[in-house]
Image (tube, rainbow, N blue to C red; front, side, top):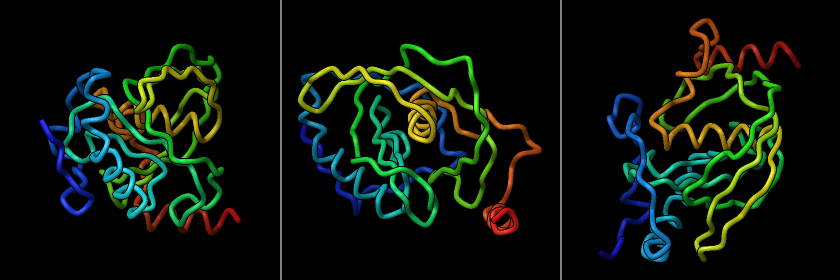
Length: 181
């Protein structure tokens, strides 16, 4: 089956869309190249919306794939720089006991931020588009992005991991950040 979805045809699923609560399916190595144009469109959509990561279910494709692309932008001005990295069938193989609470937002939940507790260090494995297995360690903000995107593959959103008292509108979040500078 030929994948023909382009960046123009991708729309970001919003909270309430049932696909965001589904457990995404594994994709086989034989399907990787079939999805290559879709992954390119997915990355373009993420960049268009100033995201630092995006999961396939966020554009209504329930497969175990996401992109991590930390970089400073208007939504995350202090984000570290890294090349956009497509991760297929990703998983955490080890997580530190140390947890850090920090701010998160989501392209599928616009206008809301929340403090979310995440593992500060993780070891992960994923496949590349070429079928190569990668095992690596992540920490800090990049580990946070990986965990956030992995949640999307498991039918979770960041609000599921936050205390209700830690939800903020984007406007209130910006006021809070301006006061703390």
